Length: 403
Image (cartoon, rainbow, N blue to C red; front, side, top):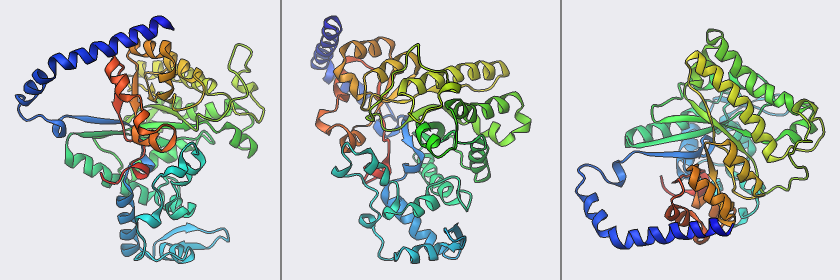
């Protein structure tokens, strides 16, 4: 621990000395480079969720446009089985789109979401209504995710217009059934949701306990089979799964997501049951999820490599909060991680991340609303010490006022 702390301090002071000696020279050299400045160098947002990749004004404008152009389109089915038009949905919620504004949309994170992941997740519901989230920012709904596809294509168009901006948007696969992959691929292919400026990362929520209590699965192995069996099948026989095969060519990796600050009452060790024996109601620990995702991805990647197809990387949310053991698993299994805030408390791990140059996609604006005040964010410190950091947006819908 002492050695790692001393080495990190040395790296910090070395960077400060470099800035003092070379800042003016570097600034002059930068000005001599033709046709290159911050705006026209290539930038990749490696941590952004597709369901919140637009800002709040963009979503508001899109909702108002659909109400003006398609008020009579049937968009949902209520609990009584009645088909609902878009206008009827808004009427039932007693919402007048003319009066609708950004404040009423209420998707922006505020101080009430600090250390309250449940309240933050509720911000995904426009005007606090889950029906509107289902209609506008879901891939699998009554209209086949058409509105969500259209708003993402508008974001893609903005990226293409700016030319130098790229993004890796996260889409969800839950592991509740094996049909999820086919449905997601169909949504992307039918609606032509693709761009040379965008790749997909598949995020898998750690929700075994929820599915188990609702009797959707009987053990953890079923979740793994629902996630990975369709991928092996599409790799083995792409002609039988043309849409999924086409979609996977735009997928770059996998992510593991959920609230890391949840307490874990079980430990992943040599005595932990295998997935087919994990039949209790308790959610497996973070490291259990990550290890079995990594194990299945390793075999899948080898198969895809032999078939000449693209492979996938593991890039989980890690170290945003919670136990430091999450970062140990991230170090051993991941190509890069998202957040990594807890590294600031563990010099040994921080130095290991520096030595291995494991990527850390950091989102100071996101952290400011959830777990760590902006002025305490370790991004400048990580950068000075030479850790492999990048800046990402996470959720523009919740955190951004402008593009």
